[in-house]
Length: 121
Image (cartoon, rainbow, N blue to C red):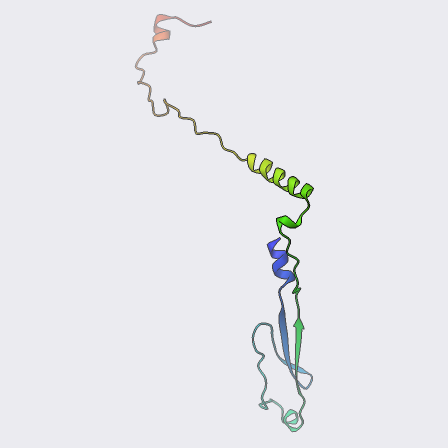
């Protein structure tokens, strides 16, 4: 939503400089370079044929800002209950402590169940 507001309110100018029918320079955010009489052909210096075009692209300049108090009571109630229930979804559980996490059982040298031939059936 922030990008929509940013790009809808963005204004900029596009400047173009022509000498005769030839486009010399185009600039969007900077000043355009003008030929200043230093043209390549001598026929362009004889007559004043350079022109400078400026195109202004205006963005939206009036935004309607509403506050929470501008809403009626039903919308305020809905928004507060929705926000509260949405935030309640992300309540984390307390971290459980595992007491035997670092317990290492002893090394078995012999398998006692096989030696005594006692098996659970």
